Structure formats: C-alpha cells, structure tokens
Image (cartoon, rainbow over all chains, first blue to last red; front, side, top):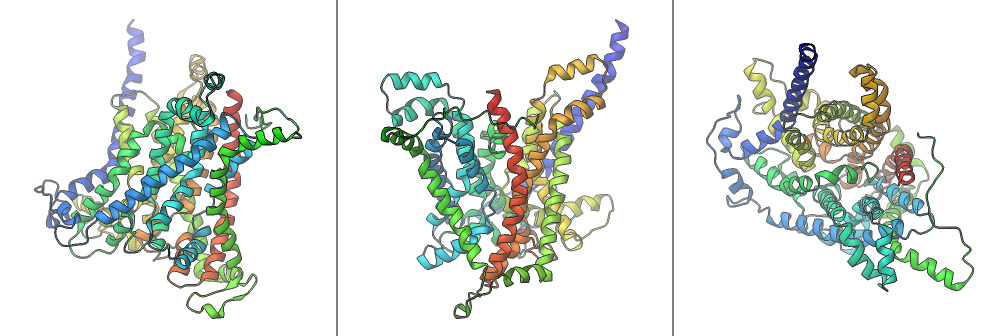
Length: 283
Length: 312
C-alpha cells in the first residue's frame, strides 16, 4: 500500500508541474492581447508610459475616438464594406461549393480526386501571381474601388478550402439515406436541400465561419484594389501604421473592435478549425 | 505507411460512354461541379496566364507607349538586381525561421495540452487567440504596443528589472517581424499537432508503458514517428501561407530595413514604381517557388487523404 503511494506521488507532482507550465505559457501567449484590451480602456496619457501604468483609471475615450466622435474619420463605412465583402463572398462560396462537394463525394464524377486536387492547387498559387492583371482589368473596366470586385476575389480565394471541407463533411452522410429519398422520387435539388444539408449542417457552418475569417482578414487585394469608397477594415487599420502623437489607446480600441468578429467566429468554429485550415487533411 | 499510394478511390465502375443516354448521365453527374470549376479557372488561372505574358514585356505604366517585347530580360533583371535578390533571400529566411520556430513551440504546447489538467479547455482557448487577431491588427499591436522603444510593453517590463531599452524594430528588423509571425502561427501548428497526438493509438502507448518504456522512449519511438506527417503538413501549409505574407512586412517595417520579401517587392514594383513587366517576372518567380513547396505539400496531403479514404 505504502509502496504504491510512494510510486504515484512524484508522477502526480510532475503532472501538476506540467499543468502549471501549460497555464503559464497560455497566459504568456495571451498577454499581448490582454494588454491591448487594458490599454484600449486607458486614457492616451496613461497608455503611453514607461514603466507601464497597470492600474490607471479606465475610460472609454479610446473607443469614442475610434468611432469618430472626436472628429476623425469614421470607421463605419470600412466596417460595413468588410461585412458586405465577407458575408456575401461567404454565401457565394457556399452556393458554389455545396453542389461541387456533392459531385465529389456522394455521387462522384470520374477522377474526382484529380478535381479535388486541382482545387487545392489553386490555393497554392500566391495572390501576387495574378494581382497585376486583376488590377489592370479593374482599372480598365472601372471596377477599381468597388466592393463587388473584392466579393468575387474573396469567393475565389475561399472556394478551394470550402470544397475540400464540404467534401469531407458530405462524405460522412450515409448513402442509405440518400438512396431512400431517391426511391421516394425526390429530385436532386430537393435531396440536397432536404436530406443532405441538414445532416451536414454543423460542417457547413464551420466552413462558412472559416471563409468569413479569411475574407475579413484579407489585406493585399483590398489595399491594391480599393480606395476611399470600398475601403475595408484592415485597410482602415493601415492608417495607424505611422504614429502621430498620442494614439495608443485608439489603436488598441480599433484593433480590438476589428478583431472581435474574427475572435467570435474562430471560437465558434474551434472544433472544426483544424480541419478547415489543413484543407480537410486532418480531422 | 506512406507507401500505400495505390489509389483505393473512385467507387465508380469503369463503363464505356457509348450511348447518348450514358453521355447525358455523365454530364448530369458533372453538372453540379461545373460552376465552381469554371469560376476558379476564370478568376485564378486566367490572371496568372496574363502575368506570364506581361512578364515578357518591358512595360512601365507611366510610359505605356514604350511597351515592347523583351523576352527573358525582366527575369535576368530580377535575378541580377541586388534589391530583388535580397528580397528572395529575405523570403526564404523569413519563411524558414517562422515555420521552424512555430513548429517547435507548437509541438511543445501540443504535448502539454495532450495531458489532462485542470482548465485545459481555457488554456487551449488562450493559446488559439493570437491566431484569431486580424493580421494587420496583430502587426500594429507588436509595432506600437510591444516594440515601441519609448512606451512599448517590452521595454516597460525591462525597465522593472533595470534592463536595456533597445529599439527593437530598428536593431533587429527581420527578427521583429519573425517574432510577431511566430506568435500568430504557433497556435496553428499546435492545433494540427494536437490533432495528430489525439489520433494516436493509445493502446499501443499503454502497451509500451507496461513493457517499461520511459516517457522519452515513448515519445522518440512511438509519438514522433506518428507525428511525422503532421509535422510535414504543418511545415508545408505554414510555408505556403507565410511565403505569401504581406501584412506583417507592410505594417511593421513597410518593407524597409532589409525586410522586403517577394510579395512586398511585387506590390511595390507595380503599385509604386509602376514597373509592370518586372513585377510580373518577380510574381512568376514567387509562383515557381510556391510550386516547389506545393508539390511536396500535395504529396503529404494526398497520402493523408488516401489513408482516410481507404479507412472509410
């Protein structure tokens, strides 16, 4: 009896130690975000001090400043543009990817793996590969500074990921269920909407959230192709690259507000995040 | 394991498409696929072909009339220009450093999170958070809030211990960019490796433990071989994303102090210098680099994928 307790104790102590280490590292990784959040609630004079003022009085001035009540440029048009670009492109992605995934999983075409890998290979083509012709095309057709151009580009950016993710989710739908619906005389669109979609819904939701995140984050296309009218939230943030006077609380407030949708979507999709980011290779 | 590449895929039996009704049926099967396929070809492949064509022209957008065919001279310019050659080197260095560092730290974190302890879910959430900050916002956070020599948090904390007060971005510009990217990409690696760890055969590990294997032996001979492909996958996917990085370089240093990587250089050479031909040649070079990485990446993904399909 006493022999076992002696054997167990060091192991448990080490387990606690490793647990503490994990906590320590977790807090360390989160520290910059926590500090950013705290700074966003400080006044500008308390935000930029050395040594840092941890216990300074809290205020909403940074947020007031960011939302333009202090006279600066309002972020609302940029936030609205980002919302349109991300939400509409995600809807387009789902509309295109869902039937494609069906033709690659439930009722596969010949050589469906080749098609799947074609989609993947387009994801590996860097953005700069087509940036200039897209810019020239937009310039000549008057599509520069137009949010709908970004919708099209973001759709193409996320479509391969969505096809891969949905393919793996639809492959999990039991064939027997679909066959039963076919015997009952249901047509393809009905089967997709009434039988397949409800079963694959959690997967589709995760796909949508990941596409939303990538579109919301995108900078290079937006920076090159938009200007005053169609400016997105990340482009708005690039206005803070050069520091002018005291603006730290405002930068923190802006960064936090603009990251909030991504943080929310990311935590909502947490369980399927790996599958999406690894293009369905890891479950 | 990786040797099982004989495709146990395509469940569709081979049939001859002679009769019109058969051909019609084949098209009906393909129909749902076509919109996505056509869209992808139009939006991603055509512009690249255009880039390829432009790369053979001497074309400055400010002098459109002087545009003429120059063959491969843009490529020789790109490869001999010291700035551009430097940006090729910077791209390799940046990508390799960030991928290796975030993989190693990610592996450590994944091993810690693979164990049961109190609050594991919370720690996991804390660790994922850096990946879920908008990249520009993350770069701004590092630039102004952490690195600033006068009021940044890093120097603020150093102040307490009486340490030096370095100007992080000016002193070590590339390292500063790399550190901010490692912070953002470590969670990504951790998630992939954690998924790998959790797909391990636990009975095998227990059997080894019963046979008296130490923790290190289990890690070295069971865990690491199993994780190999997940490490490869993390490294390759990470490379594909980080090779393309624009946000961090643009925000932290604006490509200055020798941190301009190829995507930034391409952006700069046509957006600011209006050198369309040169920019396209540099863009084609980025694509060639990506294809080399991507060939390996596709092989890893397809081996994981085949295994998944054959298991099902």
